Picture 1 (spheres, rainbow over the protein chains, first blue to last red):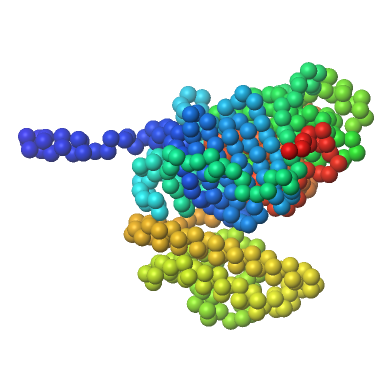
Picture 2: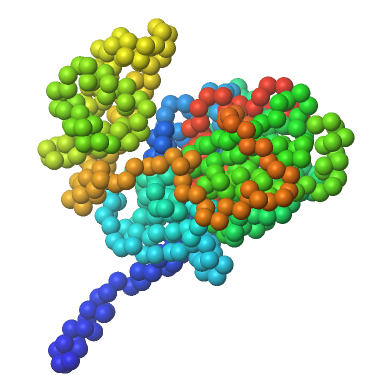
Length: 326
Length: 211
């Protein structure tokens, strides 16, 4: 190499982007942005059967996360969250559902590191640069290594590190849902008033889903779970529509999560059997050993059934249900 | 989507599709998400290629769909062999289709208008060639499905759907644990759910509070 060539190479290296183009590093930057950025925007979600348009206000201030989602479809529905409390306003149903998990910080939105155990279930690849309506982005693929979980393709804005678009896909790479921002503006000074729901709250019926005492609660466990999933949270809580406390267990593979709800069937109410879907989340409900079991999560439906079929009640739980004659 | 359907779409956007074929196309639009998405994108591409990129262009497409539906309810009803009430519902659904088309096209065109960047226009056009979105129920199966052979009490997998009311309640409880990558989607699903989301009357009394 000539001296001139060496200087040229040195200049090129000096001018190279400071940020490395590793998928894991881009995900880390994106995780920081998701945890710390305050912004106002609108986005579209597309899945089979529906396209939804929503506005979002998201603020992180002094470690407190506030967020407000508003459906722009005209039904007036909103979701407002402040740290570990979530309120879903359904004015068309004259209903508000409050979900509060005292002392928990799951809602902060931090992304896991895609190393160690998680790398056994997902493969992270930097795909390349791609233009979007917000400018150039780094495209990162998080591919599931089996069919028990979904994968992601993320378009990460080079400046803000926010995911301006994400495609949820199955193990075969087929897109299941697409979320795309159409407007996005960063604002460090979002006022509290931005998180006030724009509806008359006095006319709503309020339903609170709170943690419940665990004394005497039947114990259940999943004797066999899909590869990579482990129990992360277990407790009793109230769930609207049920007259008894519900055993709520959460399993995660480090990224995807599955909630398992178990309760004694409500007297006089026909047990539920079947599947449901809401956006990317699916649900599967059935009866196991006389108990109503409902499994919910952002995973393929077969994964939910795997959980339901692997549940085993503790002897006390089975006895309780049988004593009731269910 | 077949080449013939694509041709029909293109002809429809040019305002030259014969009325009988328009009725059939509208019927297909009501049930075919891929087709609705394609209509939005094709209309946008047309606007972009013409260099106008204006929102009225997209709205014009939606208006064309609405007008066609307004002209066609009887024909659609006869094609579908539906009673009058159902035919009315169909036409309402048709208007929803038009709204959806308008929404998709307007949103995409707005993006172009707001940015006016050659890269952005290219990005939007590129979206038209993207693969369709598949239903969650059709996702790839795990290769080592072993749950069926497990010996714990078998779960009953009866046909039928989980009522939306119950689904919503459980989703609210799950929301806080959803992956940060999909939490917005889960929230969007919650507040976009169809009617009937309220808990069943007569249950859960002890959890109700007054505020």
